[in-house]
Image 1 (cartoon, rainbow, N blue to C red):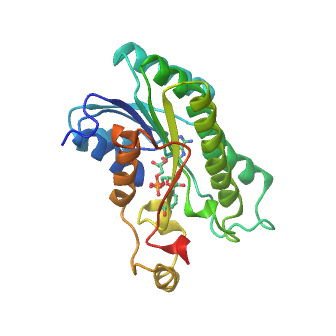
Image 2: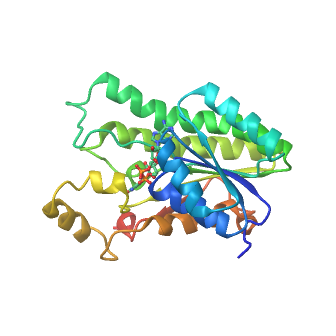
Length: 251
Ligand SMILES: NC(=O)c1ccc[n+]([C@@H]2O[C@H](COP(=O)([O-])OP(=O)(O)OC[C@H]3O[C@@H](n4cnc5c(N)ncnc54)[C@H](O)[C@@H]3O)[C@@H](O)[C@H]2O)c1
């Protein structure tokens, strides 16, 4: 029960779904968790469920001022930052093809899903470095590997996260920073976001049949992968892609 003992880890988008499960598991394994989300009630509920080594910060990951305030606050209050999970994300309206999507929807998607991860790394890396090193996990998606006709901007945003993760990983490694950076690629996971892309029972059944393992994933299935990447068990792992998808990407 102490795979990340004494680490201070920020998890964005931790007021729901995968972020909440990740924050809960990290705390269970000994970390102090900074739960951040744009959704205050959701974030506070996560902290309450964890009970103890967690606190909440209201956070829009697309905003630079929020990152500055929150990272500075962690260094001041907790005295260090060892891990960062850039998990916050949006999927937008469904379906959204490149023909129906508006420029405003496209820009918002990239602002949260890509700029949010960029800012997390920009402000997270120096804080982790000055804390003696650590690990960043960026939540991408299975969508980073496939064409996603009904989620056009979403797919593009997750492809960008996959590529940018490798850039951060290699840049940090070459410069001798002790900061690892990896991406996680969930398949279809039962969260509010996952449910939103399966609007009917028929769509849900169709999606289920596409998963070789025969069922959807749970938020905890992703949280266990992130726990490994944040922990020192993965100390030789950087710039890689951890796909957790019931086999969908293998067919
Ligand atoms: N559920 C899936 O099937 C699935 C599949 C692949 C990837 N993902 C990715 O996993 C991550 C978590 O998704 P989830 O399924 O748990 O969704 P979710 O909707 O349950 O949780 C996302 C959380 O992010 C928060 N958020 C949204 N915009 C934000 C912003 N600008 N700043 C801070 N927080 C913000 C939301 O308030 C919410 O609490 C996302 O990056 C998503 O793209 C999910």
